[in-house]
Length: 345
Image 1 (cartoon, helix red, strand yellow):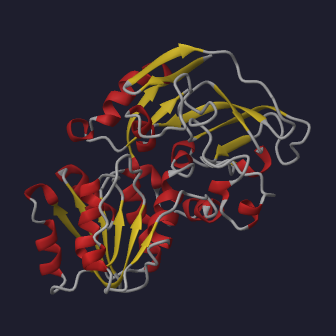
Image 2 (image 1 turned 45 degrees about the vertical axis):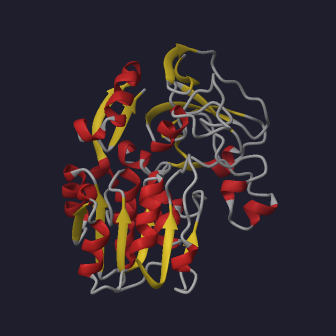
């Protein structure tokens, strides 16, 4: 089968690989029909994710058809149409029982990281009963790919961890796919203002269409001054970091109001300064999280009811044979205006 393989920092290739096989009774083999590329895949390619070793098939998002199941799988059978969760969970360990599926002792974020992932024709899914979701009849496959990772990530790590409440002023730093997912789902809680901050005008224009009340281009270095002026010197109630670089995390520290929350979503590959000398007395909460996908069933319902339309995030479409071109397009968003790319397998 064809698969996109990580070959070490800065290196990737489309290769022929053996078909995956059932190795545990709770495994399923899924024939992937659509997948995508995540910003986390770009972090892997930069060498930021030490757990991902050269030779790994990348990807942790997708939809497909069950090809085979192990004898321990009871919820799915060959031919079932399924959504693949980016998080594999046994449902039984201490962390899973606490709803922290991302730290499942035999799962978590392993797809495209510690085991082969979804940017291939077939993928092995551990703990299939609790790591796959049935696709509703008539559902749009492309929209559902957005439910594998970015929608629950934006919602759980940004909106829920940020404790967004009605009337809040929310700033989302980073108008890429994850930031836009946070923007879409923050509106569940009717914040008074949602300010989107980014360096790329096109992404800010998209954010405006998606419901941002204000946009700020931070390229001139005056984002903090602009935000503080907008809020009467107070700052924002919730600052969501959706990039994963030191400058954006510091920006969040500079604009958060007393009593506010900084919710980190970004994958950080280098150290970040924490300015406790200015934050210690301001009742600030700082949260971190790896998505648990506990909200995936709820988000499936909101998509089915058309409360949100995640397909709006899709800007480009490719075939699996065009994966290298898809990566080039996705990684050069400033020139290509890309958000999410869909890969048809």
